[in-house]
Amino acid sequence: MKILGIESSCDETAAAVVENGSKILSNVVASQIEIHARYGGVVPEIASRQHVLAIVPVIDKALSQAKVTWGDIDGIAVTYGPGLAGSLLVGLNAAKAIALAKQFPFIGINHLEGHIYANWLEREKPPILPCLCLIVSGGHSDLVLMKGHGQFEKLGRTRDDAAGEAFDKAARILGLGYPGGPAIEQAARAGKAHLPLPRAWLRGSHDFSFSGLKTALWHLVQRENISPDTSLMADAAASFQWAVVDVLVSKTIEAAKETGVRQILLSGGVAANKALTEHFLNSSPVPVLVPPPYLCTDNAAMIAACGYYRFQTGQTSGYDLDVVPSLSIG
Ligand code: KG4
Ligand code: ZN
Figure 1 (tube, rainbow, N blue to C red):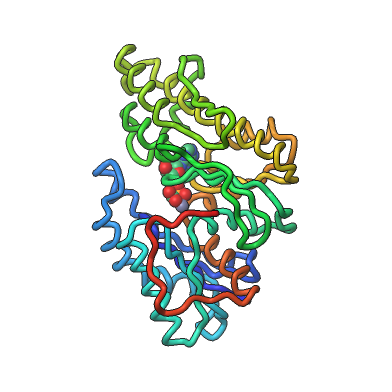
Figure 2 (tube, protein in one colour):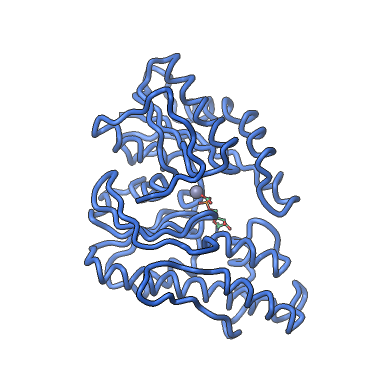
């Protein structure tokens, strides 16, 4: 079964063809990062207009790279939330138009569930359910128990900034540019994580909080006069990164022990961070699965994989499906 996935929730216009929920036949991502970088973050109206320009060429490219024609496609899976309303509408309407014209079944996919399904891609053995999923992206930090396909129970979430958002804001404080995650990871390589920064443990809860850490970093930068050309810069980046990693890893492992799962699945843009994945792999008592970095950040292959499992249970969406910008998981 070949599924066309479409993703346009933020600043990536993406389309992919995935076979049987795991084999990537094509995975096209048109990034708008350069356009938004000059504003220091994603500008919603610019993002939706870029999606309008890119969506049809990106879908065409996904079909041609997969070496398939419309006749080979069995269904369409498209992100309908969470994300920017104007951006989501472009992908959803493109999916509806194709579904109507070609009489394909189509299904709206929760972007966060999609991130989790990146762990089903290009793997010989699928993950073992139930499992514990940590989704760490620009907009979310969710700890979710996945009991079965389409069955999610949220155990924890961020109470303020998402992990990726914290990286983006910290990079701005340090003058490292946008997007912040890769910039901080790069700067941190030359530094030592010895500067004192706080961690919000929120004991007794599986929730996270990163805004206090961000404020503490700001005070540290002011106090020590840290700027990109000072030697403490790399240490500040490393100390910040370690503070985020420390909390994410400790709290996720604690939840894994409590729930007795046999695997932990990481996903979302922040899972592309090597310091995070290495610390997970070194500290977890159960196997930790992480998609390769290009499948951690936004893509449509993960949406197609998720769609495959929805179609397997006979689920489809109707043409009255609307976008849900604040959709959550579990
Ligand atoms: O999942 P994603 O591509 O988009 C959303 O759904 O939000 O995640 C983007 C986020 C950004 O905040 C970005 O700074 C962060 O993921 N990110 C990273 C890394 N690569 C991307 N954070 C830390 N280290 C990285 N290497
Ligand atoms: Zn995402």
